[in-house]
Image 1 (cartoon, rainbow, N blue to C red):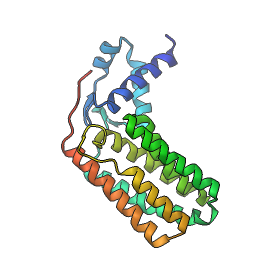
Image 2: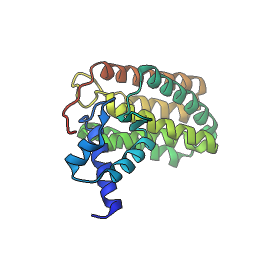
Image 3: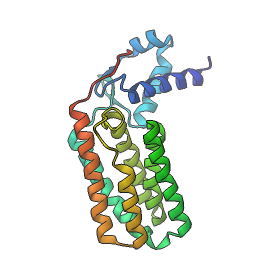
Image 4: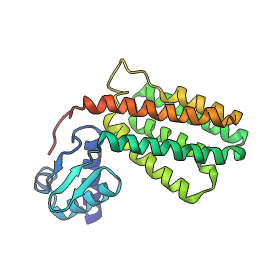
Length: 224
């Protein structure tokens, strides 16, 4: 197996394990154990861990090692609250540029999100969730604002996958599609004040949902 292929194999294996809750937040990723389990040398493991750190899935602590990312509830709250403020600014600036074609495309994204929830397909759901929020903000034509928002979406989606219980808790009703539809309707009607409140409430809902999963997190298996 070529060097890049080995590195990609290690990266994919660890990433999949984290997202499947087989490696809990805060768990140390010990190179020797990974090497023994995957039958690879330590060099591609180090490179894979660096790439995972760049994606926000792993924290590398000097003189201590690599750990599955383990955000505090305060950090999660800060990320979502900032995201809500920035998304409102971007959506507000984008409002005048939306066309009927844009709105139709965003409605299709919401339908994809609904289907992903019905199919319990977390990967498709997270992608549709991201696509919705990017679609309502990217027309602001502010490069820096869009970059900050995308970075926050990627980071908060990691929190969503790690802690949200919408696929595991039958009593928890999915909230994203209905709230996304409401947010979109406010954009169509250009109701800025209501849109601000709707985005704030949407992300408060996300924080609460993640908080519940955070306090009840269980590692489903252990592979290293």
